[in-house]
Figure (cartoon, rainbow, N blue to C red):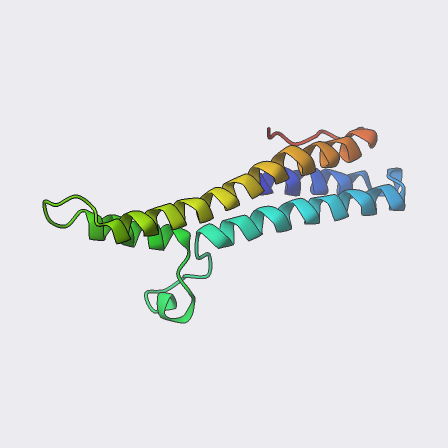
Length: 129
């Protein structure tokens, strides 16, 4: 999605003076809102700042790490998962669902607004839901 939005912004820059400044500013603002929302969701699910093996010590773990750690715990042994493990799974699943709903809302609301703005400038729109 980021590449598509960047491509639309590049086409906007290429159009140059043919695009009125207020319209171009509106498209840029909509692009920023969309990418900021999707980035926030991504960063809630996955730690994007890890670059080296020491970075997990410097940056907090995110939902994907917590779910993976829980999977490791419940896969040990031959017993069924404990009530505590089930409670943690339900908590993490709910937190993940919040982020997935947030992403879905951003895609359903922000992409049509962005596409309408670039479409009004006779520029190609981006895909999405």
